[in-house]
Length: 89
Length: 451
Image (cartoon, rainbow over all chains, first blue to last red; front, top):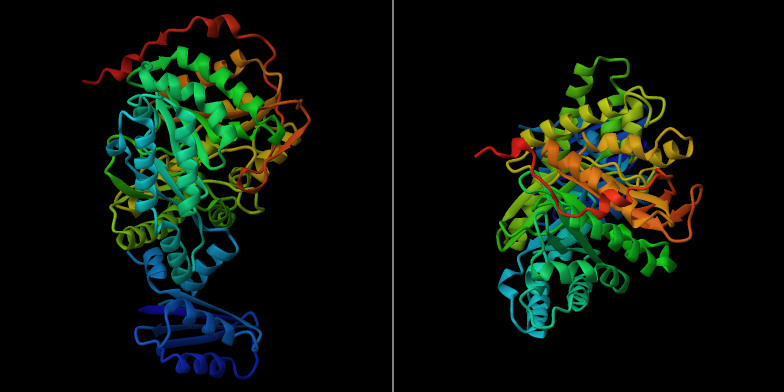
C-alpha cells in the first residue's frame, strides 16, 4: 500500500532519524524522500510502501505519528491515492 | 510526487475545512412492503441494520487511511409513505420510530426518507404520513422528513402547499421546548431529486437500485482561499479558479466513494458536490460571495455572484467524476453559515433577497427562522413562491423554515452542532390567506410539454 508521510515542524537534529527508526521497526519500506526548509520550517515528504508492515494500518499509523511527538514535529500518514486523485488526470 | 501538491492537499483539509460531508447509503425498502404494519416495520429494521451494518466502520477506516475527514455517515430510504399506505394500521409514527431505532443501531446521525411525493396528488399512505410528521419529528431524534409538493411536469399541488404550512407550524409547536427543532428536520421540495445525499432532504428514490452509496463533498473554505488569489481579476479568471477548485474537491469525493462502495460491496451512486457551509469560521458560502467583491452578502450583485459560483462549481464537478448528481451547487442555509448570520444582523440580507438567491443556487430557503406567530398561510405562501421558482425554472427548490415558538424578530434560536444558530427574520406582515385557501393545483408550465 503506497502511502505518503509528511513531517512538518521546527528544524532540529534527529527528525529524519526518529521517523525512519519508527518505519524500520514496523518494516515499512521507504521508496522516496524529499526534504527541504520552507520559510524556516522543516518539511519532509516520504513515499513509503506499507505492504509488509508488521502491524495493521491504524496501529502502524499511530506509531509513526507518535514518533514525531518527542521531536516536536507533526507527522501525517495518508494513502497516496488521495494526492493522485486530486492532482493527476 | 510533487511536494507542493501534497502540501496543498493537506492545507485544504487542515486549514480550509475540506471534507467529505457525508457518505449516505441509499436503501430501497420496496421489498419490505407488507400488509401487516408490525411485520413491515420489522422487515425495515432488519434490512437497514443488515445493509448498513458496516457503514460507519468503513467510513472511519477510510477517514483514517486517507486522512480526509468524513463528517457524517447517513442513510436514506424509500419514501415511507409508499410502505405505510400498504399496511393495515397506517401507523406512521411507529415507522419513524423504527427508522430512528435502526439509525441508532448502526450509528448514523441522520436517516432520511420519512417522505411523501405529492406533487400531483395524495395516495393513501401520503395523507397518513404527512399528518404524522410533527409527532414523528418530535418523538424521534435522527429521522428526517421531506415532502415534494411540485414538479415541472406536474405543476404545484396547492392543497399540499396549504397543508405543509400547517404541518410546519404544528412541528414547531410540538418541539417548542427545544427551539422548535422539529422544523429543522423537515424540508418541503419542488423537483426533489432521488439521489441527494444531504440531509434533511435525502430520500432513496423508487428509480434507484436496491442499495447505492452517494457521496456529498463540501469545501466553501477551499473555494474562498482559492479566489483570494485572484483578487481584482476578471470574472473569467474567477470562474476558472472556482471550476478548477471544484474539480479537485470532487475528485477526492470520487475516490472516497469508489473505495467505500468497493469495501461495502454496493454500487457507487453519485458524487454531489455542494458547497455546504457549517457554522465553523472559514466554512462559509457568504464569505465566498463577499470575497468576490461584495461588501456584504445580500447587497446588489449577490444573485449574480451566487449564480456564477453555482455554475462554476457544477462545471468543475461534472468533469471530475463519472456520475455527478444530487443537488451539486451551493447551499445557502442561514443558520449554518456565519457570514449569512452576520449579514442578517447588519441588515444587509432579508428574506426577499434570499428568495431571489434561491432562483440561482442549488436549493432554497434553508434554515431560516421566522417569528413564532407567523401564520400558517404565510408559510404556505413562502412554500408556493419557492415551488414556483423551482417549477418554472426546472430546478430543485426547497423550504426549511422554523417558526420558532415564542420568538420574535431580534431573537436568536440556537440549535447547536451543524444546525447552528438562526436570527429571527421578519416576514411580510400582509396576509396570503385567501390565496392559500383556494387549494387545487397550479398547472404545469407550458415548457414542461417536451414529449
